[in-house]
Structures are given as C-alpha cells and as structure tokens.
Image (cartoon, rainbow over all chains, first blue to last red; front, side, top):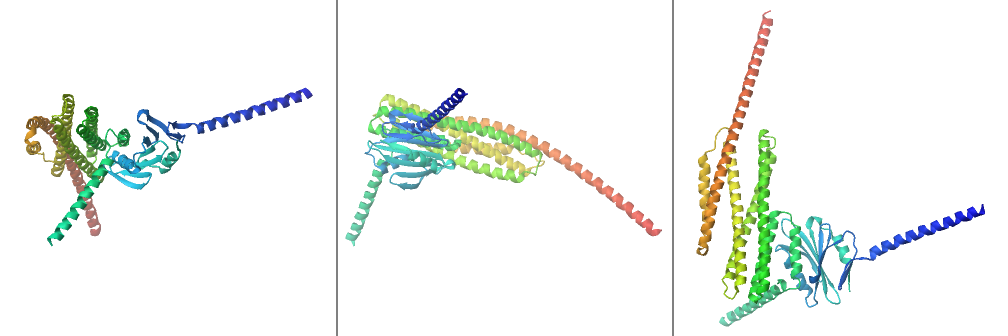
Length: 159
Length: 329
C-alpha cells in the first residue's frame, strides 16, 4: 500500500514539474517575440509594433517602408550636413503641388494634400550618432490614426 | 526732392533684389535633384500618393505632375552636362507618359461601360415615368458637376502636355547634345504627341456626349409626338467641326502635325457623326413608339372615363325619373 502511495506522490511531483517547465517555455517564447525587432540596420532598429509589417527594403538607398493597413511609413537616412528645415522642405516638395502644412516644429512636420482624395503626411526627424533618420508617414485622410503613427514613431531606437 | 526720390528707389531696389536672392536660395534648398540623397525617397512618396489615390482622373493628374517633374529634372541634368543620368531619366519620363496614357484609356473604357449601364437604367425608368423624377434630376446635376470637373482636368492635362512638348522641342534643338540623347528626346516627343492625341480624343468624346445630352433635353422638351429633325444634328455637327478646326489653328511651327491631327479629327468626327445619327434615329423611333403607346393609353382612359360618365348620367337620370314618379304618386 505504501509503495502505491509513494508511486502516486512521485507521479504528482513529476507532473507538476513538467507543467511548470511548459509554462516557463511559453513565457520565454513570448518574451523572445517581444524582444525580436521588426527591423534593424546599422543606424536604427524598429521594435515589433502591433499591426506593422515590413513592406519594402531598398538597402542600397537606405530606404525601408512599413505598412499598417492604410498607413505607410517610409524610413530614410540623411547626412548630418542637411538641416532639418532643408529636409522638411525637400520632403514637402516631394508631395504633389497642392499641399498644406498643418503643424510644424523643429523635428516634426504635419501636412495634408489638397486634392479630391486627400492624403495626410507626418514627418519625424530623429538625430542619430552617424546621421539623421527621417520617417515619412502617409495615410489617406479618412483612415488617419495618429496613435498608430505615434506608437510606431516611439518604437524606433537609434544607434 | 530728386535726391530723396533716388534714395527711395535705390532702397526699394536693394530690398527687392535682396528678397529675390533669398527666394532663390530657398528654391535651391527645397528642390530635389536626381543627385540628391533624398531623391529615391521622393519617388517613393510619389508612388505612395498614387497608390492611395483611387479616382482615375486624379491619378492621371498626379502622373501628369510627376512627368512634369521628371522633365524639369532632365532639363537640369542636361544643363549640368550629366547626359547619362538625363538619358535614364528620359526613359523614366516615358514610363510616366505610358502610365498616364493607360490611365486615361482605362478611364475612357470605364466611362463607356458606365454610360451603357446608365442608358439601360434610363430605358428601364422610362417605362415607369414620374416616380423617380427628383432623383434623376439630382443625378443629372451630379453628373454635370462631374463632367465639369473632368473637363477642367482634361484641359489641364492637355495644356501641360503642350508645355512639355515645347520643352522637349527646345531640348531637341540644342546643338550640344549627342545623337543618342537626341534620339531619346525624339522618342519622348513622339510619346508626348501620342498622349496629346489621346487627350484630344477624350475631349472629342466628351463634346460628343455633351451634344447628345443637349439633344436629348431638346427632344424631351418637344417630347410626346414630334420627331426631332435630322437637320438639327447635321447643323450641330457642322457647327462643332469648325470649333474643333479652330482649336487646331495654332502657331506656324507645327503646321504639318496639326494638319495630320485635323485630318484625323475630321475622320473621327465623321465616324462620330454617323454613330450619332444612328443613335438619334434609334432614340427617335423609341420615343415615337412610346408616344404612340401613351396616346393609346390616354385614348383608352378617355374612352373609359366617357363610358363611366355616360353610365353615371344614365343612373342619375334613372334616379331622377324614380323621384318624379314618387312625387307624382
């Protein structure tokens, strides 16, 4: 009888230990997912953000784009020689002619095209050690979601 | 006094010269050249703007604008003597023109399909009159607004195409360009002219549609029985043709091209006129049939009413006789 009790006790112990190790492995896996960056290169890294996926990478020109539904972000790098104002002006001139600036500060520019189908543009400039990283968000006006853009912009790490 | 005047003029001129210099500095800073490190980013921004634009005429306008930008960049590169880059950009420019052309063709095709659908709907509605009069009026207003917008857009496209042709011709006339570059420019010019012809064709089609609509309105006003005179159509055609030929009267440099265009236009106009006649005849026949049916119905109704009136008259007479008989008793 004692042998049976001991056997059952051991079985329970083994089962509990196994369950705990399974739970730990799941935890570790989720942590690993969170830690895995969505993208990284020599100048910056983008942490995984819900809904955002890598769309296109042109490594030669240091242009990379990500997409979250109808919002697209083009990330590019620029040398420190270019002033923020010059960068903003150049990006602004890259849009179609009919563009209105909504908001502007040192490192940020918000704009909207003035056509039949308007497009919102948000430009963020980050200063890295080896150059500037420019994020150009573009969204059709009706799908504009500022939190989505903010969340992505906050998840960029510069080296 | 003279001294004062001179002083004010000089200060004003200094101010103006200073401000223009400042503006030029800004322009230099803002414009992106193919050599700029942000040039590829600017192309990506253009493509994204196109991708987010669904309306075909808006897409055409965007492509037109981007083609303009490419041509300006080509001019800058040629001026700077960077001919290799200019040649590759010329190829890109041609791609933009091709895309613009296909966009306009697609738009035309879609318009044709939409018009056919509308015509079918109108025929269906015609059988049940009066019910949807208000909605059809609103639809008509909307369609006229759309047409106005389309006309404006196509005028803009045509005008821009003309400007680009002038720019390309100016580039072609440059003596310092190598033959290879000139061949590229000549090819671009050919494409440009083809695109211009497409604009004209689209414009001609819209004019035709406008005339058809006007004729339909006139027919509706005359309505019921009368058959629209075929002379009217021929008059309209006669009046429309000189208008188009007026458009072709341009500076003397492009006389041969314009002659060709005018001939093509005339041929197209004839084809359209024939199509119009056929359509008009068909419509007129349909209207006559409808009018006859209406008349028949109206006559039937009138007959029924007359019969009812007679019946009522008989009844009232019968009642009156009964009453008289009662009174006599």
